[in-house]
Amino acid sequence: MKKRKEKRTNKEDGPRIECGPLNFRNRKPRVFHHAEKATKNDMMEFFGEPISVYTDAQALADGVLVGVSSLGVGFKGMPINRITQHLWADFEPLYTNEGGLNRETVADALRTKCEMATNRGGIWTLPPNLWLIENEVGGWTLMYPSDY
View (cartoon, helix red, strand yellow):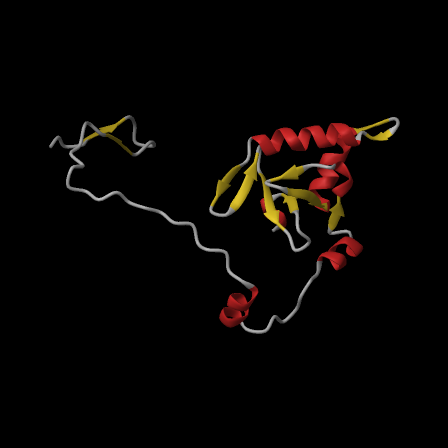
């Protein structure tokens, strides 16, 4: 079995480990499992009765969420039907022209981003730094991580 070599490029980089061939014959593979989706009853049992509940309808009425079902964009068999107002405020000017919002261009941009989605710990991330979270109305909410 060969030993790892430590190579320091400069003091700011810290140690850099270069690995040569190692013998993994006697090691068992490490298996990672994603947590199972908790049910409403599981959540109630763990956390107790909620102090306050903020529904999708309230978030739409307050302007915290924007309904975007009309864009017709789906992901994993469900529609992207909500975008946070914070993201929409940044997104909308990019796709507005003299005739108003170009909805097809917005839809195309979202479809392209969804093609590059990756799942990280149960949260779907879209480039450059967006989250896609399953919502209570059978779809997805697109948001910045800071909007969560």
